[in-house]
Every structure is written in structure tokens, then in C-alpha cells.
Amino acid sequence: LLSRLDQALHNGGVGKGDRQAEIIKLMLCKVQLSRKSRNLAPRSTDDLRAYLNSVLREVRIELPEIEITDIQLDLASTTAAWSVLTNMEPNLLNSSWAQDIFMRFGPKFLKKDLDQYFTPTEIVEFMCQSLEISGNSAVIDPAGGSADFLTGAAFASSPSLEPSSQPRIHYWDQSEEAATVARLNLWINGVKAELSIK
Picture (cartoon, rainbow, N blue to C red):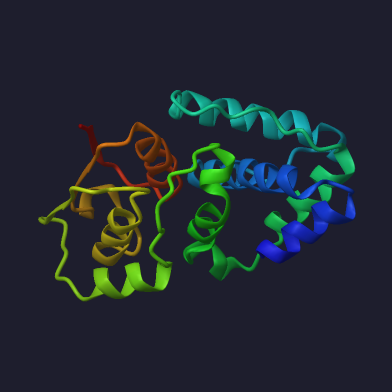
């Protein structure tokens, strides 16, 4: 999926740095629309950018501490990339596609160089699945970073991520920059958490 998105934008002449930011914005639109169970496309392709920018306005309301600009792509590139997302295989919606895109581009999109090592998704999944986590659990990460272990814990306890069955998630970190990355990661994955920065 990521390589198809990247190729669609590359074919439209979009530079590498710009592609990464635009892919994150398109992913945010896809997550928001999927979460709200709304149509994934406007009535006409001429309205596509305006439609997606209206979705991004909704995301900005939910994530006021994160600067998210409007889609900067031309109409042809927007249409090509959005077509990739709307035609993605149904089983990808229940996989870690959004987390994979976030891990690849999230810190760059937020312009946050955390100078930290990000634990690969496979290790997070292995460790979280090795624990007994239920909706009654409290999961605390005192060095939360990008909140990958917390999202992993939420998925391990409830693959459907029903809010009533999620464990209580507590995030701590000393870095406000890390917390910004974590906020985006938690939002993308639909995980409710209490964040503390100290």
C-alpha cells in the first residue's frame, strides 16, 4: 500500500519530502472517514481536494496541538493517491497499515527529530501479546516515546478496539516533542490515553 501511494505521487512529480507529508494527510482523512463511517469519496473528482480538506478540518479540531495543513497536491495527484486508498483491500483496514505509515513518516510529518530508536512493530506486537492485558488492566509506560507500546497494548487487549474493552492507558514522557508524536499515534489508532509530561 505504501509503495503504491508513494508511486502514485512520484508519478505526479511530487518530491520525496512532500510525498511523505501528503501521504500522512491522506491517511488521516482515510482514518477519520472510516471512523465516522462516511463515504470515502465526494460526488465528483473536481471536488476531491475541497472534500479532503474539510475532513482535515475535522481532524484539526480533534488534534488542536498538531499543525496539519491542507492538501498541497494538484488534483491529478490527489485523485491518484486517493484512488489507491479507497481501493485498498478490505482486510488492510483491520491491519496495522496506519501504524506502519505513521512509523515511517509520522515524526518527519510533525517535524520532530526525537533522536530516539523506534521499536519495530513486530517487537511491540510480540511483547504485548506475551502479556495478559484485558479491559480491566492498567497499562503504564513511564518512557512513552511515540506510544507504540501503548497502542500495541490496546490492540492486544481488544483487536476491535471497542472503547469499553480497552485497558486504562497512561502515558508519561519528559519530552513535549515525544508527546506530540504520541498524540498523533494514539489518535490514528483510536486509543484513549491519559498523557503526562514531566
